[in-house]
Length: 284
Image 1 (cartoon, rainbow, N blue to C red):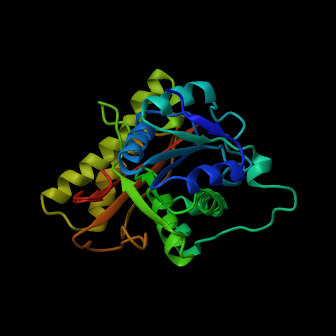
Image 2: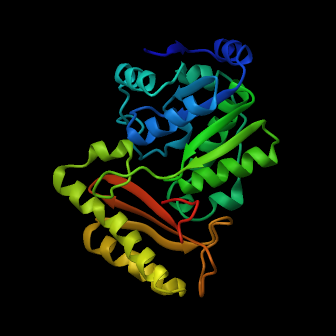
Image 3: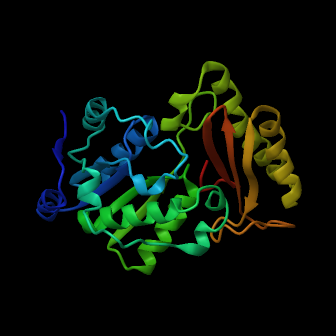
């Protein structure tokens, strides 16, 4: 059954305030199995399972893909309903950012590294829209994927710092059978590009393998992840080994846990992927 669709914050609040427990999945649409895994978890956790579908202009830079980002709303509604979503919030940009809108939310330390230097303003846009969405939905369990690991950490910090009444849940990365992390941007890849895109997951697998064998030198872990990507990508924004909580890059030996994260371009498409080593209860 298709979910109910509302387009205004007032209508969204009316529905969520009348509900018992609410579970919420924010998305930009172009739903794939990764999103639907989150939606099914929301349906399991909440009496009212809510999804937002909103391509947020604030998180796109001037030379990024805002205009061509896929927006298959009708197909998305069918998929969301099949996954158990009861209510979809599909606002216009003017509803989220009405005339005179000025306020922005920033989490500067966590946004400083990784994707931050390569996407100026991106995480301010993410934090702002998620803050507004969570305020509109009200008390809830909010479910995110760990593929956007830095985004997840920014949101967790924002929710703690601003005392937003939401429990943030991070779900494991959903991958294609060949290991490619699911992403709406995978649709941009030609067949040869998609094959080259597997270099990201292969790099992470190489780092995981030497970590499991006892390697703890950050440079060695970084080199293991970098080598397959360097052979296949058109450009690399970063291959980094970092603390999984602070996101600060690790320069020497790593401890019991480490984030290995990659951002690279395959053709015109920017892809990200990560793993938290050793992987127990973390991004995989």
